[in-house]
Amino acid sequence: MTLTGVLFRNWPLKVGALALSTILWVYVAAEQPTSKFIDVQVELDLPPELALARPAPQVRAAVTGPWREVIKLYDSPLTVHLAVPASADPPHWQAVLVPSDIQVPHAARVTIQDVEPRGIELDIDRVVRRDVPVAVRTMVVPESGFALARPVAVTPATVRISGPRALVQAVDSFPTEVVEIRGVTGPFERVVALDTAGHSLLRVSPREVTVSGRARKS
Image (tube, rainbow, N blue to C red; front, top):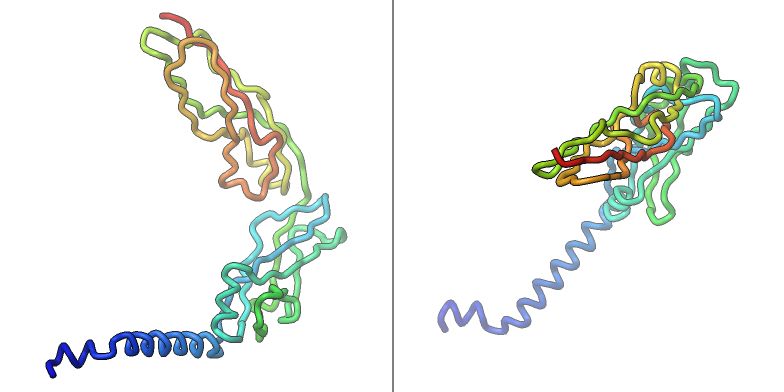
């Protein structure tokens, strides 16, 4: 019998055996215990008069369990809930963490062995509010033979921002997202979102403004 004949003899049985062995290997590997450090999502409960002055520090937990249970945590993350009391005095508030503080999704059969750091410090500040002008970042390109009849208007012209005192006082104006309006031949109006990138610790209201204007034949 040729080598080809030997290789392809009873090939359905050989393929089935290979598939079964692969399934068994995957099952056994998935049940193997593993240990990993997993990022923990920090959920803060802040009183209305206080705000974070900078993002909360990163928290990680040492997790052990079957490999297939550990990987579930990438879709359903670990969380820790911290309630900052109204009596907290800026500029800092400290909390001590223990493994039992880490909340594990019900679907994951894992054990929290440790958490780092054990102590975290939050930078907090008093909440202040301020009205600032909107900085329009809209490019209007009239159709050929037309020109803008007047400068682009924005409604409302100011928005209210609130958050930690130092960050609010550092803002002189709040920009819109960059928008390009082409082919204008007459009145136009466009709702434009404010650009909140880089302002994650601030709240702004409203979050959208209306940009309007008019073009006429030049």
